[in-house]
Image (cartoon, rainbow, N blue to C red):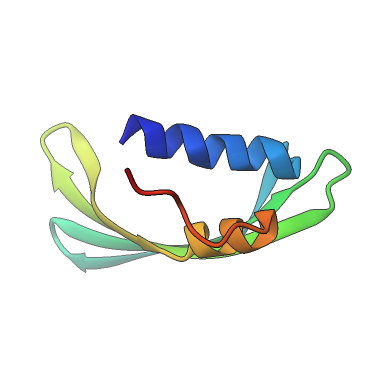
Length: 92
């Protein structure tokens, strides 16, 4: 897992991501102990120019310690790979 995270971070450095801009943030209560959070986020370079954007849906479960992410669904990796000109993430 750490290798995958490092690869994603290296791609962000390679394409010049230095900041991001939230485009959408909506939280919907699904039940007393479950919420859904929809995000749309734009990754930008140092001039604030857009590089790519992605959407994600996070399922949040309420615990004694507060809300925790229970599941994530997003299209960030394919968008990042396309921006970086890479066909896929290496698997090994």
